[in-house]
Amino acid sequence: MYVVLRRPYILLFLDDKDLVIRGVINVSTARVEYSEDQQAMLNSPNTFSICTPHRGFWLQTTSQKEMHDWVYEMAPLLGSQLRRNVNLVVTNQ
Image (cartoon, rainbow, N blue to C red; front, side, top):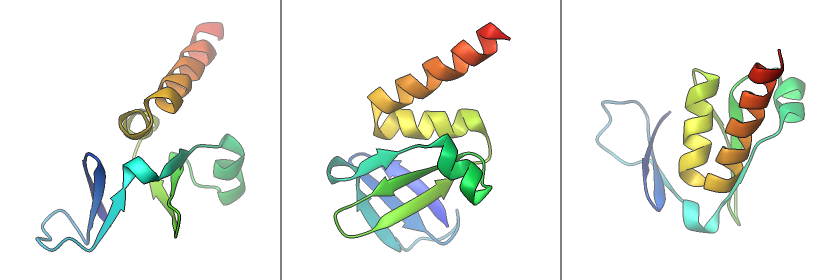
């Protein structure tokens, strides 16, 4: 699945060459969630979820930075918190 953010929507495609929009998520009515516990339980790094009134989606990125960027674009307060926590961990080592 290939995902494009065009606020306030997330557009879902089969891949980066697909011209047909396969699904649409309205970010303004969705809840973005992140949990290290869920990542550990699923054994899937760089994942977060988007919950709509009718459905939930798990998204996985190729890097932690990319995940933080996506979360920040959809939910700036949560994204800022994630970035701050990562900076605290790096600073304290």
